[in-house]
Amino acid sequence: MTDDCNRVEKRSLLESSNVTPAPPSVNRPIPVPSVYLDERGEIHNLQVGGLRINLLSSKKGVMRSGDIHQNTQHDFVVKGKVEVWKLTANGTQKTIYHSYDYVRIEPFVPHIFHFLEDTIMAEWWEPQGFYAWFYEPYRKLVQHSFQRTCPGRFQLWKADSDDEGGCSSSTASIGIISLALAAGVTIGYVLGRHNSSSRY
Image 1 (cartoon, rainbow, N blue to C red):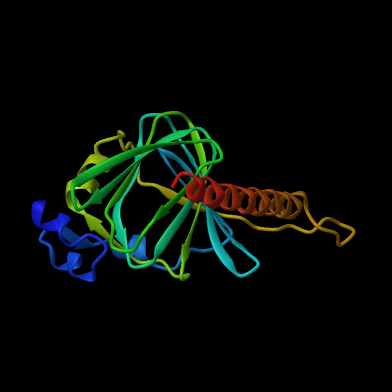
Image 2: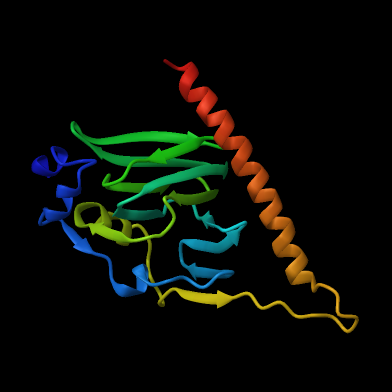
């Protein structure tokens, strides 16, 4: 892992023996809107104004990720507490984030989300498009953080029109959730940038 520390934030990290391509089930296009469910919680996959964004609900004690992306990952903690592990030039750095905190993960940085409380987060990537590689030393920890009793599964959201041709309650709910999420992410991003710049 020491050699990997010297490659953090560099594409050459992908040449490490600790890095493997994530399986096609991870790197395939995700249907939107949909929800992915497993023992850790839920991932709501949304597209809002052309932006692919996920809203995650994660249970206390579990971990997510253990991977690497070629793009910048943005996260916003809506509610809860999460410890974010990032591989740095000096080893693993662990930072705790609370409600209303913004998290930025640079490209080619192995990372883990360790949920210290039941937590709701939003996440998105710049540029858009998702592709992941697993960082095996971290991914193994993620896999052992919960007991898998069955494979995770997707549920597609289907809008049903009522008899009068109006919007269904599920369509209205998606709109309300999306609007609230967009407002929360925007406010959190602005506050996060302000807090980050005021710390230095």
